Amino acid sequence: MRQNVHKDIYRFAFDEASSELRKILQSFEQLCAKKNQVEKLLEVLKPEIDLTEEADTKEADTKPNIQRTTHLPQCIVVTRLRVL
Image (cartoon, rainbow, N blue to C red; front, top):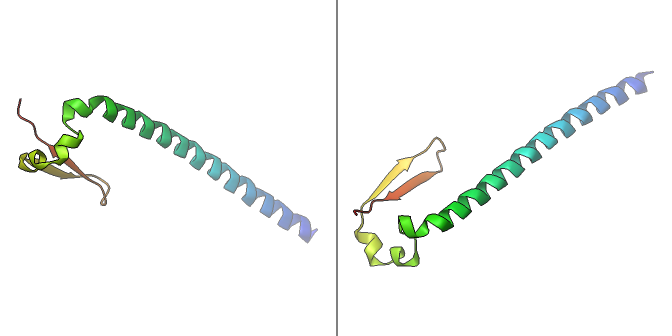
């Protein structure tokens, strides 16, 4: 009888862990899809926002940059200003 109680507890824990892992996997797949969308968007916008290799030369050093922190402490967004 006692062994059956432990089996039920282990089964419940296993089911809960499996459910959590499925949710994590789903979220991870969504993040990967969004990452791919952002990468494609950056490829299209490169000429517009001047992210080409030329921007990494001395020209880029003379352009003003604005740094902004995000809600993630390790993530800082740097925006390069371009006068048209």
